[in-house]
Amino acid sequence: MLAAWDNRYADDVIALWNKMAVRDSYKEMTPESFSGIFLNNPYFDGKNTFVWLEDGAVAGFACGCTGDDLPLGDIAGYITCIVIDGGDASIESQHRYKTMLAALEMRFRELGKKQADVLFFNPMQLPWYIPGTDRHEHNNAPGVPIGSALHSLLLQSGYAERAVENAMYLKLGSFEVPESILAKEAQAVEDGYTVELFDRDKHSGIREMLDALGNPLWRKEIGESCENGTPVVIAALRGQAVGFAGPVIRQANGRGYFAGIGVHPEHEGHGLGSSLFFRLCEAFQTIGTDYMSLYTGSNNPAIRIYERAGFKTVKQFAIMRRELEQ
Image (cartoon, rainbow, N blue to C red; front, top):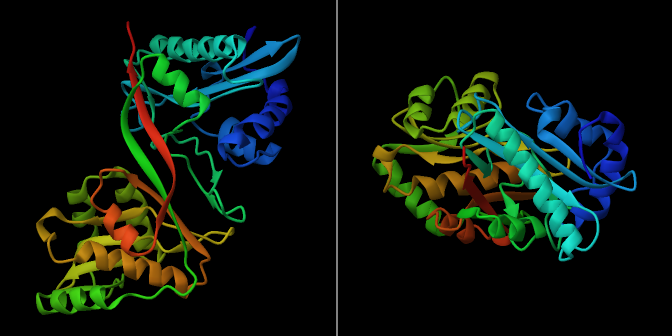
């Protein structure tokens, strides 16, 4: 039967996660990581969280989150996960999935939300292991894994697949900036552009550049990094920032963390995007980073830049949505 969340279920949900969710490459949970991702998350709401009980034992877990200050948060509820014990194709499992999904959707409606989304803006970030590696991990799943039981359920339940995100991976090893990029940089220098680490004594216009790119997450993270001294690779026209890649942070697990890459629309066509990304890889290598992983839309032209740097697509995630009937 469906039951509302209670903290006494936490240990059993962790055990369920470590039995079932890991099949889709999600990282195992500990009491500490479960609390960090779910219970202590500022967007956690027990009324958006459910368990399925079978003979008193936890056989399912579903969690969503809402927040008017989140991207699309005024109209959308986010589905974080639905995990079910047992065979995914059985009639019993399908019933559990659908009941828990319906409970999440009903809660979203109660809060006045007009749609349910699975997307990368979800603040409950679920780390996962990169297939074929020695437990190299990515810090967040940008959607639902394509081919998973939840992906199939959402398709059957009327969710539209709005985009496909390619998860890409590179073991840095002996990475080098190729001659083709050096040639592009030489031409860009003739046009007045430079690509290098941000230096507050040399570069200005960070806020203006970030405002032009229009990404609130970049505006916050890159802006703060430039202010507090965290390295960021900057493209500049005679000292005025026109693009970025970064920040350059080596995580404890050896992964190179960065928020993204962007070039001011008025300064495209000079090879700055390619140069920014290759110099970012170089900066990570310089600080001893073991590997890099990222995700990008399957139709994003930037995917060609990543592939030229040696990145390979290792997993795909679907961004999905359903309009909720009021």
